[in-house]
Image (cartoon, rainbow, N blue to C red):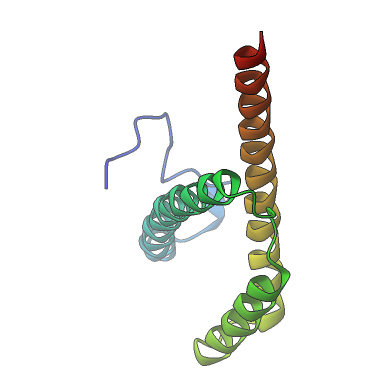
Amino acid sequence: MPEATTDYDPTASSLGASVAPAVMEELLSIRSSIDNIDATLVYLLAERFKATQRVGFLKARHQLPPADPAREAAQIARLRRLAEEAHLDPAFAEKFLNFIISEVIRHHQAISEDHESRRANGAAGADA
């Protein structure tokens, strides 16, 4: 995973001198792990959206609807079960997946509209 090239300061904190150095060291160590997990999540989400974009193009090409409520319901139920197994709040997991699903549907709608526009322009161009 490439290292971020921003001005991010992993030691940034508003706690200042109010925390003993040993406590701050432990806090920064734990936060470093959190930072690594966050970076992994971002890259995993990017990969997920690449895959869902492929689904969007396939749906547009075959004039399928952007949303698939049965699939979405099955995914939510599956994610809730996984969350319970992982000791994560299933309601949080569901909210998170619902957010992702809404973004995917929005992307699929845009892909479909673009595909329809191209199809209409191509058909219009063929008639002219």
